[in-house]
Length: 260
Image 1 (tube, rainbow, N blue to C red):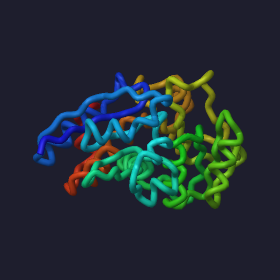
Image 2: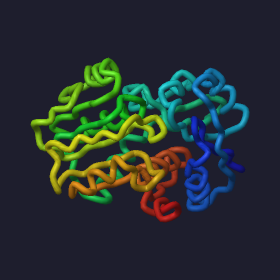
Image 3: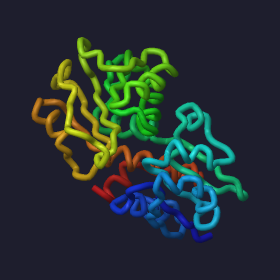
Image 4: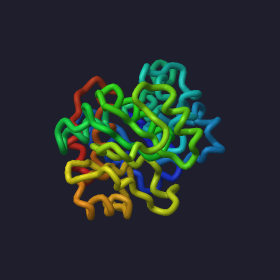
């Protein structure tokens, strides 16, 4: 079988997913190709038709992760719980959606810094599809508290309402173990950082990876925090997606070497 893979979302011109897909295919002993397909929010209603016509599996990126849920015939429990889909595979004409963002985020964090989430106080910036997946994973991993800070307070309140130990707004009086920026780089306003409560033990993670060090991440590095951009999460997330598609164990660390 020649696998037809792709990444859908907007913008996707600089997405590294095709390179990761083709590296994954090679490591799994499979053949195929992967392409970028620009799909704007206004075109989300045709996502199901597009996938069935042109692909065997796709990665889904912003701003379609929430909208992709409706395109699927079946979704995993994590995808349903987070209302976010970051990958779709076609099985016997049915679209199966899943969410590996949260697990990939934890994999990447652990690979770089070991166990830093359990009992930690965490701040998450943003309340979109990626934020929902990250918050879900943090709660499952035993974070002591998660504060969700978003430009739209009502979005943060909705996300927080679904979980214990998750709060809308910053709890700045607590020591911050991990701070995560889930807002797409192209959608950010003026750079803002949650520096109160951080220390040399804090890990600041920016899910953006272009540039490798955003102005937001640079502020934490300058403050002496440990930092990580989104490249590792992208690779570990892709490894989990493709492992599920093909039933072959893939290593996110190996994929990271392909695009580093």
